[in-house]
Image (cartoon, one colour):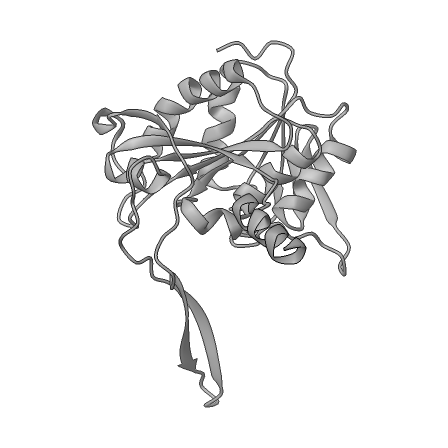
Amino acid sequence: MDLTGHRILLTNDDGIHASGLILLEKVIRQFTDQVWVVAPAEERSGAGHSISMHDPIRVRALDDHHFAVKGTPTDCALMGIYELMPQPPTLMLSGVNWGANLAEDITYSGTAAAAMEGALLGVPSIAFSQVHHMKEVHWATAEAFLPRVLDGILKTGFDPGTFVNVNFPAIPPDQVRGIRVTDQGMRPPGSFIPEGRVDARTKPYYWIRIAYKPGNDHEGTDLRAMTDREVSVTPIQLDMTARAMKDRLNRAFTG
């Protein structure tokens, strides 16, 4: 893989000291030292594509190439692109996330959101996630396949208004069957459920429980790739127009 001439911005939503971000930097620095890390000072998983509009964004420089941001992953992308790098990045990589960003996950994911912001600003961007089942995280799988996946994406190039969402399956690298280019899947509804508790003062409070429902791992989707023990590479476009429905609406209002 040739990263000559690239200025690379790394970010995530798990925080500046997260294992996946450390791994990502380790992999990329095998090919170039033109790397800057701008990441949340603390975990911001589930932040989605939010920006800090009512609180100031504070930045702490760890050194000339590492910055901890009191803000969201999108804030980090903005700060890296506009403020903290000496020149804008030519490539932005987000992750490697601790956990899946499959199917509808990308609408909640801060990891994906940072890549979305890069795409909006014309910076080629990729989101990486390591799927796991809580008991063990196979970071070696991400480390083994990341260079090959990144090389293939860079050789393909990016269309305007797009980014790529990559998920590594929850298995050791020697059990991975290959790399599959996929569609974004969609799980059955009801993956996120409020779960009530009562505190020591008898006041109610809630956690949002993640309870993925099985099904809808249709052929060709990112969900199916995980079932089939493959790395999924999903091109995502930011134009969310539902064109078939648009045609029906046009007929309804012009009929």
